[in-house]
Length: 569
View 1 (spheres, rainbow, N blue to C red):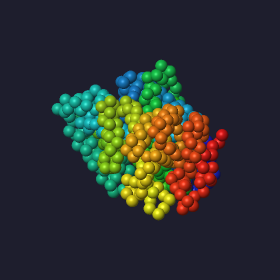
View 2 (cartoon, rainbow, N blue to C red; view 1 turned 90 degrees about the horizontal axis):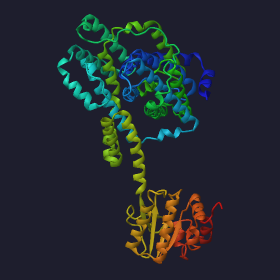
View 3 (cartoon, rainbow, N blue to C red; view 1 turned 90 degrees about the vertical axis):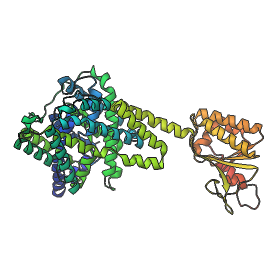
View 4 (cartoon, rainbow, N blue to C red; view 1 turned 60 degrees about the horizontal axis):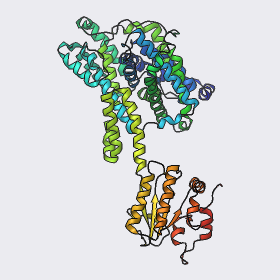
């Protein structure tokens, strides 16, 4: 379970140590202001963002397989926390904090359960359009949620985007323009420095500038809110949040966090892994690393953490060669908590809002929507629907709706799969789609059809009527069904297959099958399909079925029937 970490420790040397130290320091410098900003976004005191940046960095590398993934608080996870927990308790209160910690524990346990059950396939649980629509909507919600910090508006918290905009609009006359100017300047500084080079600690520089400007112009006395006291010292062991009355209430949010965290983190780990290490990234072991980091960290007052693409990419570019880079980042954050937290007392909240907003720009993936509009209309509408439902219904309900959309899109696509009438390419024994190859030759009394999807309850009727329609149009004496793309047929489809054969038999159509896979042959044997067919009705290929009786074609028809009829029975 900890093979990767042990292997890295055995091969460690001073050169790797220096690279990891530099990478760890770079990530810590970025993560410290980010962590406080994301804690505020989650409705938590800023120090909890530092706690969430500390323990997970120390735990995750021990159990996981990625050497580049940097875990900790992220904007998406923070807004999910706020949306899922704030409906039960007022953000920032002790009970709310306990519920957030309980959410971290539950989501960690769920990920460990997924690992035990070998559910690493959850990485494919949500389609890319659903994830893109959900994450883009989350980015919009996060950005809008920061308006009140930019303008220092006293408005109630809300998970509804529409309500947030209405509340902000109604309070515009109370705006603090010093806050707006300071926050706007923070965004400008961060974006300019990022454009120069992404390794520049733009967030920390914005924090320093914000504190200096606030102190020079005494903006704290002009209504600009500041972070204030941040408890100094490392988080101690805390189990006071354990309350099993919370489990039922927090389960939906914990489920969403456990799935989104894993899918996002695993995708980042695979994307950033060097080619020689990409095969080492294990989905089930990543679940262990992510689950253990949440479970253990919850007892050290850390809200749910996950992998950050931005920090992971910077971690890699800064030279990280092992998980020790994350551990070093955790050590630097521990030093900050122990000795330097008081320096953030005068940190303006508009600067934290600027950090959040610039962090979520990359979440709004309009390019993916444009690409899908041009290439796949169904996926485009899945993305747009998920985006809209997330905006209207909120984060947790939005992703639940996205899961349903993913499943529905699979069923819809599978219910009407591609099929084709085949013709023979001139002077060959190859048979191709006559719509793709107009030169392909057909015979009046022979219909050749290929069906390109496994058969199950959702498409059994489509299979049946697609064939009947072609038979009605062509009125053939012989039907050859190419089923090479089919590896599984469920009981509903098998019953429909029998119905089809009986129908065609009553029409005196000679039905032949070709390219049957082993599983399909076994299913035919078990269900009695072979008892309905003529003994010479199964062939190795279309060429054998159509050309086997032609003496001018050199085909061993006996071997064809022998091979094509084999089963494991």
